[in-house]
Length: 543
Image 1 (cartoon, rainbow, N blue to C red):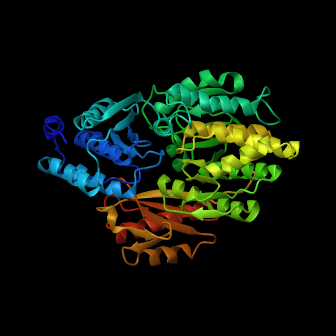
Image 2 (image 1 turned 45 degrees about the horizontal axis):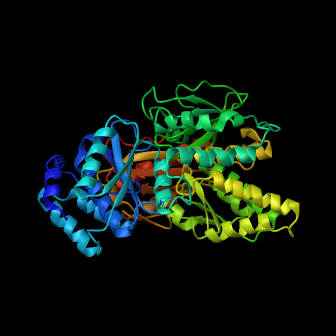
Image 3 (image 1 turned 45 degrees about the vertical axis):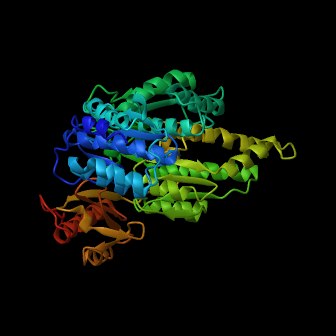
């Protein structure tokens, strides 16, 4: 380890923030002005992780759906998955040590993790469009170079594109070509192959209005359109000329359950919103009575799962299909999946790393958070079974055709992580195959009304949960209070969980009517405020 190089680079990125910063479910995410030393140190840690795994590691600078003043960073492991939990603790430790202890902390990581410091290291760097991102990327690159790591800087890219590139590099490009051109070409070619020469079918038309959240995803959409040609026409709004994530984007549309700013309101037009770094997507439309209709991650998951179940039945393939949700999944969707589709459902804690890990238990694992973040995973053995069925001339033409459709659908999907643009393509593929409008899709099941609120607290760590975050263990008395409140509402359900990045407690409530849900959510928020150290305005419970 070249201590002199580290000390020299460290002097350019001194630790000036005295507060504690924690690596959460989405990495580090906070105000951009306090992140310079964190980025430098994550560059150092990414090199150590790469040396430890003998593989390329990703470093993405983004704050996703947060507004412009924030920024963040997360590391991506070799298979495109989130950073291993034990290394999250190392990241937190490294980000918070005083400058004088930085080198000794690095040396301790090398020792405890048995890292060959002379092994090569390759770090793939990407960033979103925030004004602070170029400066923070420079700090990260300085950290990588201080430990003699090789930098693959792709500049402005979406988070899912970074995951894709990491996997391609670590599979010797068997998954795909490790360039942005390779990404666009892989997904668009598969999409056009399935779509064929008839883009319109029954109630489906090949036109989509898309809200780009004024983020990096808008840049990617414009580039994607060049590859997609006439197979689908995307009308882009919030294209980067406005304020990032401000009253637009998937998170805004999902939480507020309203149309994003700047998108013209048109009746029965298919619309979608992605978030700032393009790893979430939700669909929506306005009906003939100007009523807003949201089709979120739960809807996307059930659409994909039902489509794959149909293809598995038609092909006669004996593969285990499963769906993974979090506590945020609407009760209406869970009932539909388990009772109507009869597909196994698993519930895990919030965070894509938990969903992705559980999805790998199935031959075909569909996972989506209600916020629109998700994808589909496939075991290599399942892919082999599908390919064998396509080549098996003893099977019926119907069975082989269904297997072929299944394989093409797989090629449209970015398996490495939730990818809003890939998810749009698979949704459009399924709607086209069924000849559905969004109204047709929505008829599958009825969502229960739901509401999400946030409560500011002094310390989010006072909240601890079990049972996939559906039950609160601490502080004492809070879960009992929630249970008492929920019991007064037919089909009522509510839970609370700490934010992974801020001193906030997130409250979710659902029930049989909008008015009841609004009241339940406010009552639970008040309970959190009173029992978990709430600060700021006291939640108001409607009459």
